[in-house]
Length: 294
Image (cartoon, rainbow, N blue to C red):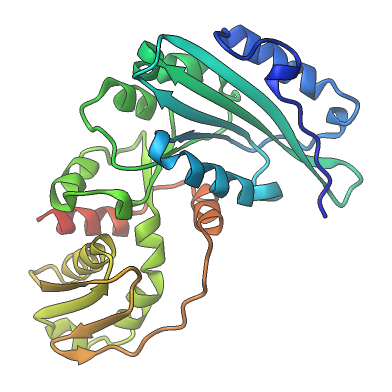
């Protein structure tokens, strides 16, 4: 069992109506602890935006990351309907490493109440680790025009989404495609889940080059991305027939079923962990998103 050390903000000051400077002091106190002097350096800042309906899922995913990504994690919990204010809790989760030290993650929970929920970037920016990449995991579909989303995207290096969590996918993919650029890379966990099926389809080359219709039984996002990938690779239209299912169950090309590839069962934590290991843009994914929006 991994050893752990944690200290909540409530043990050092009133965690309601705090200032960002209070949070910074709490982090310093934790890292000055005797255990903290043996910390391995963090490799990133991980920001997670989790509205109330996503809070439990976000916590469960973060708990499963464990020692894989020593980082500073900022869990943003917006409560725009509440009176203005900022509540915070800070903990240090440490795991023993092979060199006698510890791998530790600083977890900073920030409950953004009222107007604070509309300007999260101003709170996050002072807490970012300098000269390290910043990842933003956005739960649910972004409010594309919202200032809170646009300002956060401006200060991060990679946006991580799961388009299974979205509604009107065609329009959403079109908006997502507008974000692609040199300053921002994008990951989609729905795209990661489809990797085995893309491999199975690619193995059918060159016969698959003549495909006219793709049938997918699975979540709508997975199906649309798979069709978008095929359209982008072939450079021409391919019709999509979608049969709803909770997971990707089967795929057929022109009514001929594709042999199901071996699919490792990966937890939400493992899927997110994969994206936190990626730093560059993925032009194949970007082309698939644009084709999925057509």
